[in-house]
Image 1: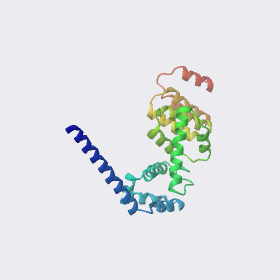
Image 2: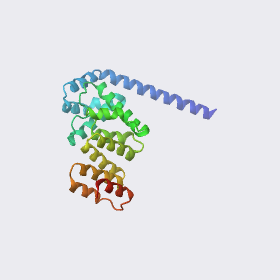
Image 3: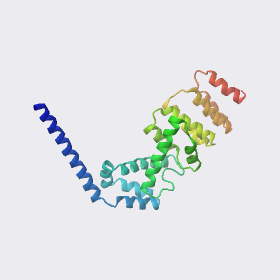
Image 4: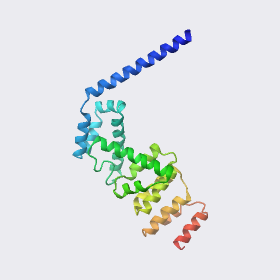
Length: 227
């Protein structure tokens, strides 16, 4: 009976704690009502610098801990900052006019990435690339955050980018693959192949020199290049 009483008290305490948490979340949402309209206004005006500052405010830091949509937008803004650092055009916030649109884009890309990883289905992802609605920093984040086979997924993306003629994207993604799984012969061969197609022979030689133990893979590429 004693142990049963302990379990009952622990359960009651747990439920009370959850009630207090729910009440605190409700209170904060009421206190900071209207934040979504403020965010939407920043996005409509493309005032991204102001939005970044707004997100550093105490109320947004508190809301990020209790509101999933606010937390997701915080992640989106981190991706945006990476895009700025890498001068990536048409990034994650391009043509976004509301918090809801930003969240939907983020979740949609996550879904398409899973389809690429598990089903090798890339049609819709390819269409998004055509519209320049996804950047390399965006892809890298998605792979780091939600991919199970990171290097394989990144390599699939690199090959899709190469196929679509986005050579700079493909090369950047292959560099990312090399960070995830260093020393892969096929990765260096693909880097060299992109450079050769662009007439950048010096860069191609640089990548080929990174191959330490050539195998039949390298021989296949040599045949393709006629060397």
